Every structure is written in C-alpha cells, then in structure tokens.
Length: 239
Image 1 (tube, rainbow, N blue to C red):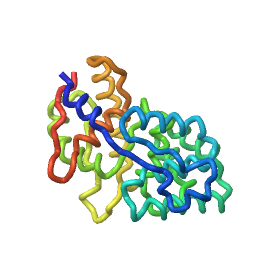
Image 2 (spheres, rainbow, N blue to C red; image 1 turned 135 degrees about the vertical axis):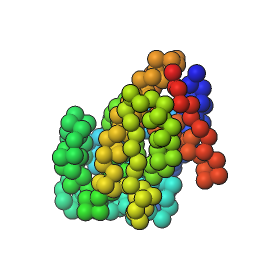
Image 3 (cartoon, helix red, strand yellow; image 1 turned 45 degrees about the vertical axis):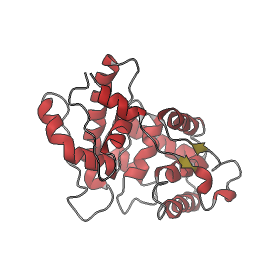
C-alpha cells in the first residue's frame, strides 16, 4: 500500500507570505497573498499563477515564492528578475510562450531558449526557472531543487534496483561538485526526474482515491527528505 506516500503528501508544508518581499509596496495589486503551504493552498497559488500568467508581476511572485525559505537570496533575486525583464522589455506572454514551448518539446534547445529570458542565463541555474513550468503543467512537470537532488542521490539505488524496467533515476551533480545550486549540468537529471515522477504518479493514481500529479510526487519527496536529522523512507512499491 502507498501509505507512506499519502502520509508524506498530507504532511507537505511550505508556507509563504508574499508581503514579506522587501519591495512589495511597489506592486499595488501583487505581493499580498499568504499561502498556508499545504497541498490545497499551494494548488490554489498554482491556479492563481496560470490565471494571471501574462502579467510579468506574477512571475516575480513565483520567484519570491520559490526562494522564500532563503532569506538572503529571495529579495535580491526577485528584484534581479524584475529589473532584467523591465530593462529588456520582456513581458509575461513572452515568458509563457517560451515555457510552453519546452512543455511541448521537452528538449534542451527549447529549455535554453526559455532560459535566455532570465537574468540567470550565464550562471546556468535551473531550479528557479523550472518552477513556473511546474506551475503551468503540474500534472506533467515537477519542481526541482537541492532538497529533491539530495533525496534522489540517496535513494536512487534502492528504487532503480526495485523496478529495473521502469524509468531509472540518475544522480544530480549537486554534492559532486562545488556548486551549491542545480545548473545546466543537471539538465539530464531534470529530464529523468520528470519521467520518473510521471511514472510514480501514474502508479499512485491507480491505487489511491485521488489523481496524483507529478507535483504531488515531488511534494511527497520534498517532505520525505525531512530535516537533516531525519529522512523517512518512502515505500519502494507505491502500488
């Protein structure tokens, strides 16, 4: 039974107060939402993003949301995006079209074309820019971050050996190099993570009373990594 997965998803918690953004007062109609951080409130925030996707301000909100737990980076990088997009006259529609092109094609060329619209292009970071993709298509695209990378790096052997005919997880470069973030060196890791979460979501959907999304699988993994003292194991057989 997939009870460990259900428990992890039910325990997911990532509360965010958008009004904490240092420059929130510069945005009259944005940066006021408070996301409680459970699955339902997070889904509501995803829906809110999609309904306002052509507004550049909403993309800044998602950047701040993504980085909320990193107080030393969230304000600086959100402002960096805002300044970059305004300076280069990049509108929400352009970001959406580029992100959607990757959603359709799933290849490095389309992902790089999307990345070129962000101020982080030269550094190669991917976790921040992959977040809006997961918000646009949560059924098919999970988020990625270093917490997920740590979980995959620690669990891939047991999952791959348990299901050798299914999609195989591969190691992230995180922890193998000096980089403290996920970069384009992890692009293949990202693609494999997408395939694997779709596979697990399908299995879980067939055996539970809910339709699992790739984002739900990722949320369960995010929770299962726990803190640095405790990493509860997810069942090898979620069916």
